[in-house]
Length: 212
Image (cartoon, rainbow, N blue to C red; front, side):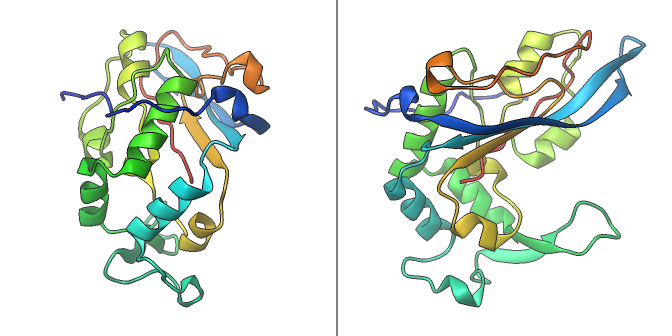
């Protein structure tokens, strides 16, 4: 599958503006790798404060709902559907419709490009690409190429925003959630926590999600 780096533009935003109030590793377990043996897999969450400004938050919120939308009545049904579930026997929660996600992915709206530009500025060592969930499920990244897997599988929130609508409407900060070694750590001058190390012999998959 061909991956294209996200679009960026010049931004005056400085990574030093970010603070990290929370950095945790969860659900550690050993998982098999394609070359034999096992590796340690963890889910890693980094919360960033002051990553998204109010202007970007409002523009993105208006896009996934409607300008002036009354959020007390829940998400608009023309853009959201109650079809998201972690398992077949779990209750369904709200998520953006597939078509809306595809439109958002291809859109070059200012707020989205600004967020992408900030991500690239915060993590210059990472090549950020959109990777739709159906492509993730259909295509496995070879574990013998950890660098390519790390750079090719990170997903920006514009593609991966799902979950409960209420949690999305009031959040001013951002969070990143990774599997298989953790998300890259922000620079030291942004008061970042220590990077979770990848203890496996290969990185078969890695996903970062931003929750704005």
